[in-house]
Image (cartoon, rainbow, N blue to C red; front, side):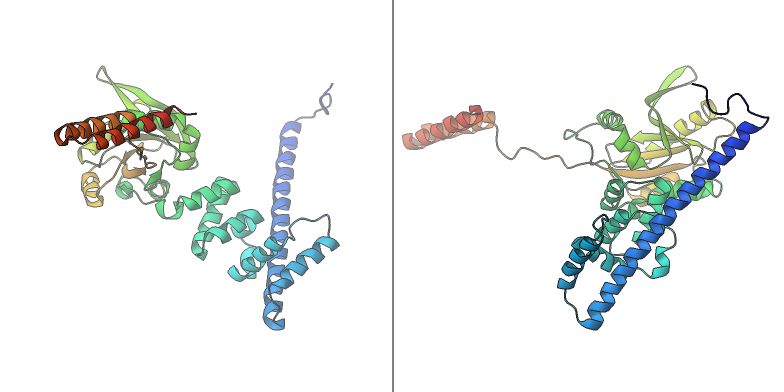
Length: 368
């Protein structure tokens, strides 16, 4: 089938057509935003009316039940007038002024995103911050809830860095706000006493979750990334490129508390990446040391006189639960100890009770 307009395309038609496509798509986005803002404004006004009527007419909570039924009857094809949604509208009106609804960021996120903010957060400043991040990162409602529950608001920009005097403005501020402290790795399952390589492999196996925790803009380039200096091979734990910062980011993983000598190794890695991988249009490479814990003062001293941009942050791993019940082997060892005591005390009744306990444990273990 011939493509429309293929046989009669004048000069510059393609650029003309592409420009029209861009304008149409922009108009579609603006229309969708306008519809969303109108819906939010309607919900705010309904909530405001309910509040005012309940206060002026002394209506109780039953009025919401009746209103939900009447609106559903009158507008059977419209969703959004359930009892619970009407209560959210009332809370929506309690929480914001009317002019906030028609402005970014609240007016640019869907209703159910706004409900999540109302449910999860009491502080108005935090709500607006998460709403803005939702717009910037394109978060779904589930991702927004996850970021709230992981306390991203307080973790963002909390790492110890030397970016203020090793990176130019505004790169330094952007990089500082990019780094979190701590990083939440609750999506991993690690054995107790896991080492750095096990953590690294687990993060690579869960790279989508890891990238979500790192934040928007990270492109994963590899683990144990090889570089060669003076004929000797070295490997970077994790290497990323950040598309907004326009720079490489080297991550070094540690399962111990931060030690000052870690910065020397990272300084070497960052310098090598700058010389071997960085292109002329790239910004300076950034190093990030992720430790189990850190002393802020120690980290600040370790970074103070370095000329390469490095940050020190911590990671939070899920708690590893130990088995609360003893194994059969442990029971047998304890039984042998009891038998030894019995042999000394000549108390056969205790021996019989202990043997019964062991037999019962083995039976329980073998039962389906």
